[in-house]
Length: 430
Image (cartoon, rainbow, N blue to C red; front, side):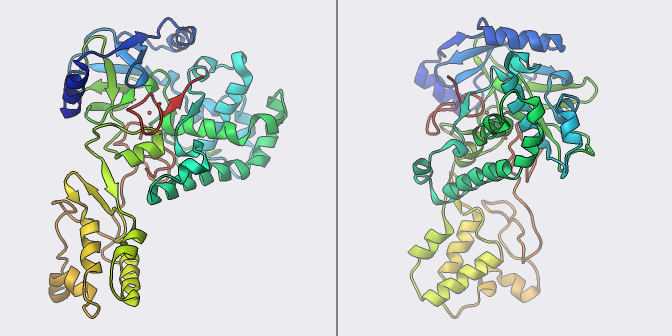
């Protein structure tokens, strides 16, 4: 990169400012991918696929990219969306199925079928460069999941359950696709195949709102972006990204620029390492957004005092939604953690509300601190409504994040989880 940010300076100092890389543009799979995209109107002038010593696969600048210069512009015809799926050989089966499939399921089934069709698949050049597997928690063995912190372990298990439920609840739909398959459906649309497809969409799609389809159920804002999804994440990089409605292209503009032969990065959003691991299968060294989460059950165990009083306090905190965002960042404890610790330390006979919100108790106002860490305190259910967190995708989708993520718990893309920032989507290759 052009040297924007503290993380970039640290890396230059450690490595002497030299990035080791090998071009991948001569490899047959990337030649075929670019031919496929060129036929659809994409011209790559600034970037080429390369293998980097610190991140694995990524995109390298073949010439210097100036600040605010367009990094990549991918035509709509190159984006894999549900519109493509509905116009394909799958369209008849999806349109006639009840209950209506979700956009996520439609994309996953298309990826599985295209991989099964091999060289005959229209999107085979893209399928061939997708990772063979991923390092998201849904791929973790049970003994690996058991080593995770309590909160992350719970989310990892939920992620596994989500994919298993998606597979088991759609077996009848999968069986209806047997005429499209050259092998028994049980051997093609397996849990393992769905897990691969689910992670491909989860870690690699960009946020792009689609028009609603009468044949699909749920919000549709996924778009798989071949070549563009080779860009890796770095937390100190700034980019501007979005779909240009006039040009019909998905564009990324670099704020700081990139030097020639250096890796071009994007930013998936202001995510801590726990969320990056959950959604993308990697962690970022020197991540300025890193936090340490404190489990509410652990607080209950370490606090001293009358058991009945502690249980009453925990019930009050739970009922008023104070047990979210119990964390410590570089800026200090979160507002929620400080509030919980204060309440847990109160004498048994003291009213919780009068101590936490003294002015509110007297004047009927809201005297909570103005911020979790110096700004405004979030409003909470049971107090004054709900202000939700803004995770990336699926259940909670945010256009502020560049890449999408169906679980919505932890945007947007491998070495092992404890390694450096890795290739898109926590990927592993044969």
